[in-house]
Length: 523
Figure 1: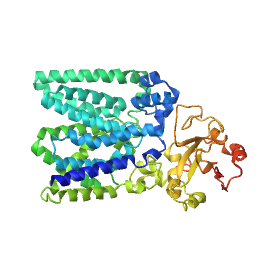
Figure 2: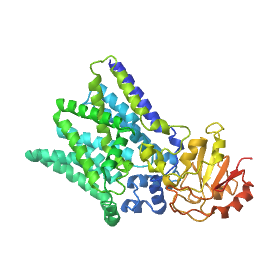
Figure 3: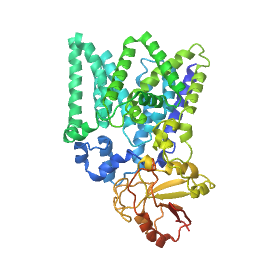
Figure 4: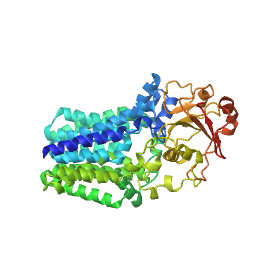
């Protein structure tokens, strides 16, 4: 039956790759993805590597983006492709690294669970460090055990490099990547030779972490500490975060994943007690350490879930072992049963509701804050006014047959209605930036003169007034902001004052109401 498992593995790889690249090129930068853009627009490479700032940007990613910017190449495509590649690499690297300790059926089942994990898919589609840290954490944990077992110097080097890179990309990863060294360091207390090896590996790791993270932490110590000890998890928030890790809004799915993982861990313990204990202690202690950090917003389901994402592959690995244990007595149909189970998990998750076409806002928190819409404030607290009739008229046209430029905007999900509007009209969207025509705005905006940015889904009003239409059909001008909750106060450009310039170029609006004007760009 090996052929059946190999076929399932190929299908899992294809599905996982497809999910990570589906509509990737159309995604519009939103929320935390802007941290790096704001930073690189305000600082050069030397300033980026020596400061943390309060906004949570990843230093190595921001440096890479800044280099692309300096060469006039920074676009959404080049910001998103690296994370997608890391997410796809996880599907191959993970099973390859674990091949010594798990059977082919377990590895293939694991690949399938990794492929359809909503949290892993989402973080493979955004310009954030989490897809990289998941992969690097896996390499780190496996590499140190290989070194412990075999004394392999390449494995020790792999541990040092992956640990330092993961911590440099995002410091919240450090509990996961340093725990392996602590685990075997304690075990080595009775063996001087092994203890010396642990000390050497630990000193090299500590030195590299100090060299990379030391200067920015020292320079911005106050801002670094300001983000710790500020909030705390609750029983409810932990439960909701674990639902996201399980990839569903349903408690039954979470219970099934946990039960399968517990059974899988027991099976691993039966054949390799140290491996089972090693993985459990590392991920358990690291998860508790992250919870006790009191990081800002950690009580939000997505925040704690993504801080735990380095441990998610191991939860799914044990669940895969458990699934294989349940079907191993029917080997002829085992791959089919596993495939059906994985497909069921997919359809019980959030992705079927997100994957409509086109959807350029996969990262919008209406989809990603909580997988249960009834518990998601970005759904429950939205304004009650109806979707403008203009968007409903566009819905009569074929999907993606038109392009809209929406201006102005706010990058935060709670002030961004375009995910809701696009679900209705199903047309392509660009974001219109009003700087400097309607005032100067630096949050989520940049002037046309920033030629290092080659964003494909952003248009400048200054260019529109010269007649550059970006291939769009309509310009939609929003006179007032959309706010969640509705009583929130935010800054908004004085768009009525800008309308005469727009009308001088494109004529009277073809559609209007109290909140917006629509201008035809194509004659």
